[in-house]
Length: 79
Image (cartoon, rainbow, N blue to C red; front, side, top):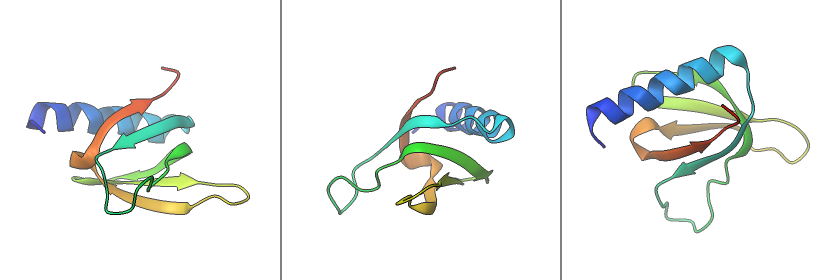
C-alpha cells in the first residue's frame, strides 16, 4: 500500500479512536484462516505507527485484536 494511503487510513483511525465511534466493519487482506478476523462492530482502542488495536466488546466479542495498518483495505463507518 502506498505510504499516502497508509497515512490517510491511520489519520481516519486516529479520529475514530478519539470519537469512540463504532465501526460497522473493517476489511483486511486475507488471512490463513478463512473468515478471520471478523471485525464487525468494533471500536479503535489504540493507533500506533504501523498497527491498530480494535476492540469488540460485549457478549461473545473478540476483545482486543491487533491489525497491521498495511493489511487494512477498507472501513465501513457512518462518517
